[in-house]
Image (cartoon, rainbow over all chains, first blue to last red; front, top):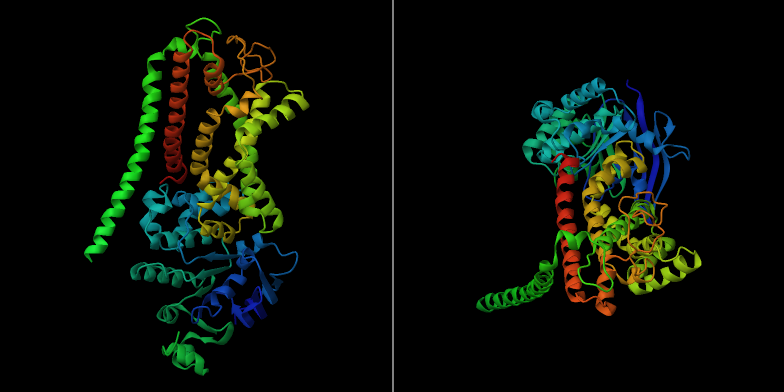
Length: 252
Length: 295
């Protein structure tokens, strides 16, 4: 039984007075993929962003309850968001490579952390791009702009960029919703290759995607966690009526 | 259906007409300045010192003064504007202090330059006893330039998409590292364009300088580059009439026989210099963007 690496208890989040998360209790074991599904506005992205404190950037947000990474309180007064985000990386809906070369994009985190050894950086670039399953497509133009790549390639470079700082957890916020089907399936393959080594939490609107790649699926609605279980159970034999309605497309 | 089409045609025609008038005015103005000024231009005109009573004077000293003042003013105002813009755009919370600062910047940017000049005269020239000097002029130009440059840089930062900031922060960079290593490099081309364009405006500024940098251009010894010598071109404490001030002065009180010709020539030089600034801004901006982003 793998250890629980990330836990949230009674997590509430308010945008001003509006309660967007109504007491979420959800734990994540080490390694594997967990998908967060639910209708638009159900709080799944909001929840994801509390896990590496990206919600701090939005003014007027208040968060109560506890979120712990390896037992450390993420919201403790002395918690260092910079350190947290090194351990808990994030990939966004819109591919957002920096306007630099592919090579520079991947090593940006490391270089700023002070790593100068050229050989080591080269090795990290190759390893990360291979892990993100984009190496073969970009290895001959590593020093060209990442902006010249296709959306799907950009997104995989962004995944490589996160992998390069060797996080424990990777959060993905609808990483394929801006991509075409071919690129989406390449991202899915990439994630399946990473699931042995990383704890992956992915928000997705695409139920088929969740059923294809996730080990576990959590269903959110109206700011509440309705149900979480092995993906197979959620899709074949959900415990809650609401989950069944959503899965079978009766709403959302 | 037909009516909508007709309306469309009339609207487009009207817009073409308006745009055409604007272009026509611009071309006529530039054409007049260049046609009447170009014949005066020569190497002698660009390098020789001005003469007060005789014909055949040049604008060498004024031209040098303009550039020197511009560089000094930029050296003072750019770091301040950059810091202010980064603070306002990337850090400042949306509260009353920030909005007071913003309002102050707006007001400062709409001050008539002659008011800036008079303030500079009272404060820098008289109160701080800097006299009519390049330094007083540079400070006055800083006041004139600061709000616009700050706005410019803020706009440049604004063009960098929010998801770049999120990308940097999500990678475990601090806010400062994100701003410094991702946002600023990405914004450099557009910042540079803004700086050069504002340089063009500073270069052509006259009113703010009449009372601060003065209206006299003592002869300079271009062999002496020690900034502490009074006849050195680099001495920041000497009075320095710029090209724009020179144009104003010979038109209002010039008594040399070829005043008209010198005024036309100077105007042409000024216009050409500003055109060059604009072209350089575009060219450098594009080049730099390619370099930095390896696009």
